[in-house]
Image (tube, rainbow, N blue to C red; front, side, top):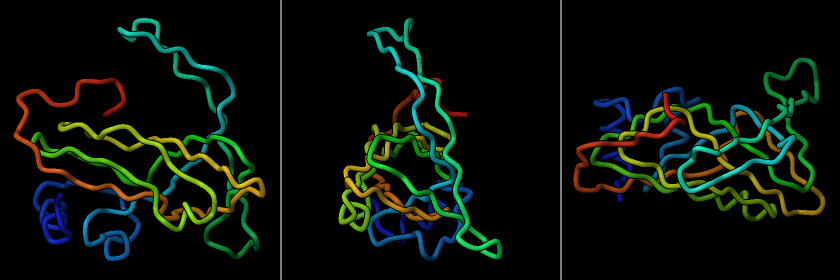
Length: 169
């Protein structure tokens, strides 16, 4: 797993991460904190098959943040118990010799919430979308740009062909 100095070097030399609100706060000893740009609620069901020929990603409705005071720079999402889709501020440019795994921040877990993500494949480039699950029966409040999860970068043997899915750029 890469450490802070190695991650910073890849950010500077290879644009590993772009669009972050505050690098010094987000860089961690063993990873990079991912922040919330938008939150969506699922409005229909999806379909998944083996070949993805019948895959249907469900429609979502954006949940809009609300400012506590009109002078506030950022608003809050007041989320009820349920499952949501999160879109990140950050764009990630995974080189062909690096994969990633994401975990929820421990602060989020202490609030009765978690995140679920897939593996970040070598060669993926784009913003991330993942699941936020609010299990706390009282819900949770999340402020715009909150740090919600941490991405860990894992060196791998370089792959010839990287990510080839439909979700990157």
